[in-house]
Image (cartoon, rainbow over the protein chains, first blue to last red):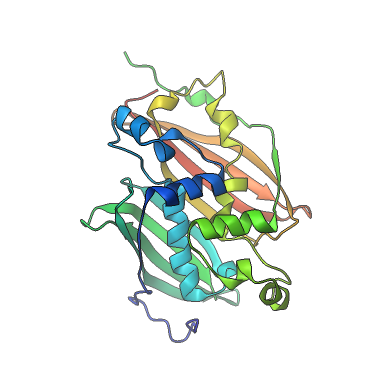
Amino acid sequence: MAPSFEEIKIGDEIPRYSVQLNQMMLWIYAGASGDFNLIHVDKEFGEKVGLGGTIAHGLSNMARLSKTITDWVEDPGALKYLAVRFAAPARPGDTITFWGRVTDKKEEDGKKIVVLDVGAENQDGVQILTRGSARVEL
Amino acid sequence: MRLVLDPNFIGKEYPPTEYEIGREKMREYARAVEDGNPYYHEKDFGLKSRYGDNIAPPCFASVYNLMGCAMMFMDPELKLNMAMLVHGEQEFEFHKPVKPGDVITTRGKIVDIYQKGHNDFIVYEARSFNQDGELVTVGRATFVIRGGN
């Protein structure tokens, strides 16, 4: 069930979402997005340019963060704003956990607005997406 | 002395791009990030929803809103050092969901250029409109040129 505006409290955590990445997922995202930059698809190239292998598309990490929020509100049209910094790469083999925490709720011009801090980290606690901010209108 | 990006390029606009939202393309994008939301995938669910059809995942904007970046990357006047360029930050304002059949026109321009430490930063803003002229998405992408351009 989607949360109601009345039930939501500042400080609430939304359900976390974790996923272990593999190279096939990076190839599939490349195909779906049209971004075939070699740093995402070619391990040898990634090693040659000093990345230690391939890295996931930053925007795929952002899309999974978006999924974490829209799985919570259910209606994806409720998401009005999402911003992140791509702080560190996510790699095949990494388990990435996406999270969100309510920082504000308010009613403005008849709109029920919930503001969240959001982000993602890997299995070692390295922050992948930082300075994340989201706004939903319920 | 290292070369820096010329702030005079702030305000430079690129020709608009056009993209038609395809039901299967947006679903393919959703599946690529394992997002099974019925608003994207189930036709009957979409038809009965307040949108009257399926809608695209918000971050499908990565496809239609950021298309014009390629022109900036290849801009012979700007001469970005693509080998050192990374996507540092991304911001999306979602004003209205996009649906299959929508024809999205996006206008992109450079809105900021600055130096910080050893890095150069360039901010690309893209505004996407649907076929009715309604603003659907604003994207702001910050690219970092590591070690300066």
